[in-house]
Structures are given as C-alpha cells and as structure tokens.
Amino acid sequence: MSFDPLLALGAAGGVSPLVRDLGLCLVAAGILSALFVRLKIPAIAALLGAGVVLGPAGLEAIGDRASVDTIANLGLTLLLFVIGLEVNLGSLLSSGRTLIVTGLVQVPLTLAIGTGLFLAIGASGWSLFGNTYADLYFGVACTFSSTLLVVKYLHERRALDSVAGRLCIGLLIFQDVWAIIFLALQPSFADPSVMPILKTFGGTALLGLAAALVARFVLVHAFHVVARSPELVVTLALAWCFGVGLAGTQISVSMEMGALIAGATIATSPFAYEVVARVIYLRDFFVTLFFVGLGMSIPVPDGPDVLVIAAIIAVVAIALRYVIFLPLLYATGLDRRNAVAVSTKLAQVSEFCLVILYLAAKLGQVDGMHVSAVIFAFVLTALATPFLFGMSDRLYLSLRGLLDKLGIRSRGVKPEAESENPPRLVLLGFHRVASALLAEIERTEPELVPETMVIDINSGLHEQLRQRGVQVVYGDMSSTEVLRHAGIDKAKVIVSTVPDTLLRGTSNAQIVRQLRQLAPDAVIIACADRASDVKLVRDAGADHAFRPPAEVAIGLVPAVIAGLEGTMPGFVESYTEQHGARADHPEVLD
Image (tube, rainbow, N blue to C red; front, side, top):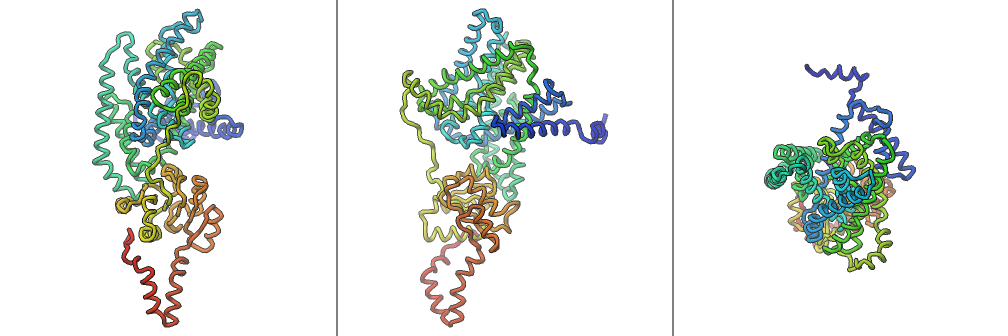
C-alpha cells in the first residue's frame, strides 16, 4: 500500500504524528529548562523531567515513542562523531602509561569488585540482592561512565584539551571497547564463545584502516573542492560520518563506533574546527531528544525497593571511582590533583549500561525491577554530575590530608601541553587588508610571523600562508566554536580585517562582542565600513576601529599636497627611501 502524506497529515489534524511528538518534547523541554535554570537546578533534570511529564508516568502524551527514540539515537551517533573530531590522538598517546594501563585494568577490576560487593550484600541475607545475573549487571552499572555527560560538561567548561579532559576521553574510549566485548559475550553467558569478540575487533580494525586511507587520499581532496562553501563542508562531513557508520554495520561494527572512527580520521584535518562548530548544534538538538526520551522510559516505581537499589548503585558507582580509579591513575604516574579530577568527572552511571540492561531483560537474565533500578541510578548520578564537575578542585583540597595519610602524596602537576608558538596576533579573515598587513609585518616585524594566526575559509591560500610561517585555521571567523577551538583566548592582539560588505550573516560589531567574551584581555582591532560604524564597533568592545578608505586617504594626502606644491620629485625620492622595500615584498594576494 502506498504512503499518502496528505492522509497522514489529515489524520493528525494537519500535523504529522512525528512532528507533533517532537514538538511536544521540545516545548516541554524548553519550558522546564527555563524554570530549572531559574531555580539553579541542572538543565539535564529539566530534560529528564520533560520526558517524565510526557511519558507513561505522566500525561502519556507521546503517541509514537519509537519514532522519538529513533531520532534521539541520532544524537548518540553525532555525539561520538564530534568526540572523534575532538580527540587528539597525539595528546592521548602522550598520556602514555597512565592511560593505557588504567584503560586496560579499570573495567575488569571495577566490574569484579562491584559485582563481588553486590554478591556479598546478597549473601548477608538482604532480599533485594542475591540474584547472580542481577548482581553482575549492577556491577556493570558501576563500571562504565557516561560519555554523553562527561563530554558535554568538558566541552562547556572548555576542558577537553586539559590533562584531566584528555584522560577522561581516553578512558571513555577504552570503556567503549570493553563495552563492545561485554555486548559480544552477553548473549552467550551460558555458553561463552570467542568468535563474536574476534569478529567485532577484526571488523573495527578493518574499518579504522580503510577509513584512515580513504580520508588521507580521497576525502581531503573532496574537502578542498567544497572549502569555499562551509555548509557543503558540513554536508560532506556528515556524509562521511554516516557512510563510515553504515559500512561498519556490515562487518559487525556498531553505527556509533563507526561514527567515532569517522570523526577520528578527520580530526587532524584543517576542516575539523569548522565541522565541530556547525555539527555541535545539530548534535545538541538530538541529544536533547535523547534525554527527553530517557525520561519517558522512567517507570513509576512499584515500591521503595527500586529506589533503594538505585541509591545503593549510585553510591557504589561514585565510591568506586575513588577506591579504584584514583589509586590506579596515581600509581601509573599521574599527579594526585588530576587523579582526583579525573575520578570525580567520571563518577556516574553510563547511558551504555541502559542499553546493556535492556538487552539483558530481552535475554531473560534480569527483570523489569532491575532495569528500573539502573535507570534511576543513572538519573541520580546524572543529576550529581554537574555538581561533581564544579566541586572537583574543592574536593581535592578537602581530600589532601586523607591522601597524605594513604601515601598518595603530591609530586607536582604535569604541565599542560601548549602549542610551540601560541598565537600572539590573530587575523580574522584574509582579504586585501590582511594581505597587506601580513606583508608589512614580514618586512618590519619578521619575528612576529610564526606567532601570527589566520582564521579564514579560503583554503586555496592556506598552503601559501603556511609556507610563509603563519599558523592557519580553516573556519568561519564569526563562529564562536571555531574561535574557541583555535585558542584565541591566548592571543594578545586580534584584528578583524574583513569589511562588513564582504561578511555574510554577521558584522564586525557582532564579531567583536564574541571576541570580547572569548578573549577578555586581548586588544581587539576591527574594521568599520563607514564613519557611523566606528562607534558601533567601539561600543561592542573594540579597542580600536579602522576604516580602510580613511587609512588610504591619510597616506595619500602628503602625495596630493606635494603635487599641488610642485615638490612631487622630492616626495617620491623621500617616499622611496623610506618605504621602497614595500614594492619588493609581494603580498599573498598579488
């Protein structure tokens, strides 16, 4: 039977059921978010609350829950793609023994201790525990941390590239690998088989190698073809994300892992910043739906037992971070401040565990009460996560005395990895003004060139600029995410060089406002098209506004006067002596 879209719309009063359900989710999330932020309650609680209100525990307003779940799962795929883009493999590998040893040991050790603890509670006669499978899955819930929450809060706090941030991301990747192993074993717990594991690892390795080769020799050229249109860069990147993900599903690799591989293979591309800057908002839309959908799955508790088990799981999960994670990180060489920070930031139940428990219920290994307990444990730790992130440093100060007694002593903080030449001067856009300015800097201040960064979307000029020793970032100069990732907060001077007549969808005044928030201590110089624009740019936060026509006029007036006074030959001779070298120093755009 053919699909009639008009009939579908008519059946829902002019709105398709899917659009109606999504609209309800977003309206509820928006209203509760505004209210919760006002009350200083974590925003994630608003999203979960919206799901509870709309779901079976509330108004039962959502008609097609499966469609919402499907769209929300796209958020997880896009999240892992963005994680791949953010992961600096060089920085991860520089973590060395700390990351590798902790990543290999943490999951089996935490799972063993967590499961053993729940088995011991059951052996003591507490009737809420004692089911071997249930205790195993409760141990699983205490073992894995939430990629979604950790990356979200690291990104919001601009800590993805800190020592603690890099280790968190690295450990989450190790946990994902361990989760794949667990999922491969899960169906055959009664009769374990090694073949599914080998098949998954083989497929992941094959997909990673193939994706890296295609990205290196084919995709990079495709990016250069569409580089002048940032929206096409994002379209190509998303095609790459889902193309690799779909290819992975054919060789026993999950869609999410394929997306992670896709992001990692272009993380070092000059286009990565632009892709992150644009995909991140799309990802946030889908992640919002994910949490609302999760809220819908929260059942009405049958009694206090479910909440008691959930509270115990949440407490054990957080406690094991300090009992296992912290000593492991310290023993493998990390300083204790960062060891506390990493342990604290990873103290939550993972959304991956919800998938594992759901599959366990389908296999008949656990019942609905056990699944509900883990869902509530996830909710409890999710609500605690923003507070834990915020109190990480204070918690370290409180624990110093106890850590000293336990032999975990201070041995100095590992310095943050910095660029060899952090930019002192940043040029936003590269057109005629920037081209002439760079040529003058090369002539008069050559030592400043390696400390100069250009942010622009014209990739055709980037190689020429790099050959001159300039740092180059591909991206939209008006994008907050591009500017943040480029590290402009470290710059001493920032110059917005492109006039408003050449900008699309923004202005120099708007750009200056963004810059002043991102780099409050920098000196900002911006272009103004007209005399009336000078005040607008200065009021926006610029320290100085220049008008290219006025600057040219200032330089031409002496020549005009010399012509009028009949002294042009002397003026030309004097000008040539002072500035003649400029004619011998060609600009990039010559």
